[in-house]
Image 1 (cartoon, rainbow, N blue to C red):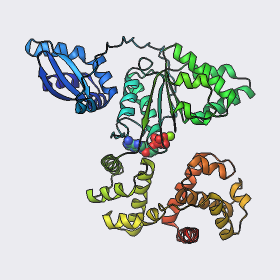
Image 2 (cartoon, rainbow, N blue to C red):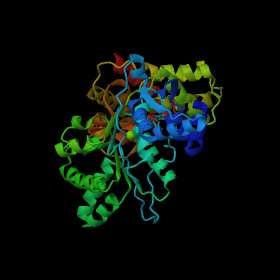
Image 3 (spheres, rainbow, N blue to C red):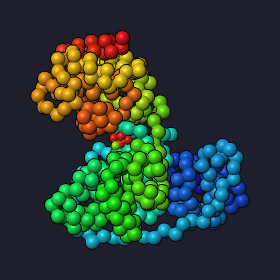
Image 4 (cartoon, protein in one colour):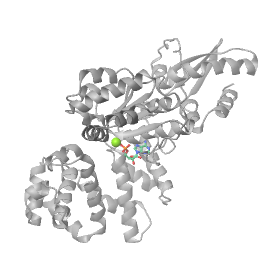
Length: 444
Ligand code: ADP
Ligand code: MG
């Protein structure tokens, strides 16, 4: 019967939906009229109960004249031998259709889709929630709040919701912004007296994606405006998705009324990927880039970098660049050489950013103020980027924290500086020497 059922479901679902919901479920046994099934997370269970209970009854009747009733357990529940609680399925409303005029769904990175997102233990729940929201926006988990550390795929997953929703309904209006853009747009609209346009733009969407909401902290006026945006969208059954590096109640200076609203829906976290997932991510990435990398080398790289996916991708780029320069195929030993620098940097010592700024300033004969300032001349930009890079590599400070210590720069500026130097270290001997010398000095 299971094969019969899955064949039927396959025909009516997109491939992502099929793999996520059906492919991850395992039939256990049939006892009486009950079919026992396990699924990976609570979310999958919720989804099965709401969507497939009826299909199971219909198709089992079709199959052999018996109406089966599904008993869904998560794998954990099953392992613990708990009996699942049976909950009444929630009523689902049909989503409203919009007027269908063309809306520019810009600002979505075409690479950030569900197809290119690899699932594993650290993100399975967040992934399932995101897909459920894309399929039924505004109905179940509203708002959806995705939180977790840097580089773990929050932005990717959030944008995948946007892509998927447009795929399902090409007329859907999707808006993606970072919380900083929201704040800036709002402030501009006050200055230029175009608040009506601002509201039109943000309140007339089917899906609003606000990335890195922790940067709303301290911005009173923006929070006030967002409160109203949120209410209007939520009241109209429009979907809101937010990401943050922490839970709503852990965001300093976030108004209580926002915190409580953010908890109306569902909060899911993303944690660092395990080794298997890291290998799968690398394999996928290598295929996309048409790189020939043997399996043992992929595993090696995945073992070396266990922090987050962004660093994992960075490691692959380092290895790729190194092999191009050396004119060698990517093998384990080439990867080892390429990652040597990177690995050394992981023995983070009790260094402060001030220590690093001091050393770099002396080394390049520039002032600390210049390192923290905004001058764009190359003689200062390069030392500044090196100092940021070393701060990232040699301390435990986060990107925003580093930005703060460099005169209040944005975390994306710090990120780009670090990427830039990581690239130059491979390509430019002078920079490589400077970075190595500075590292040696700082380690002592
Ligand atoms: P965050 O927003 O949490 O800081 P991002 O969404 O920017 O992280 O992800 C960092 C990089 O890692 C992106 O290039 C993204 O495509 C990639 N990435 C993260 N998680 C995954 C995953 N599960 N599968 C494939 N790529 C991933
Ligand atoms: Mg992000």
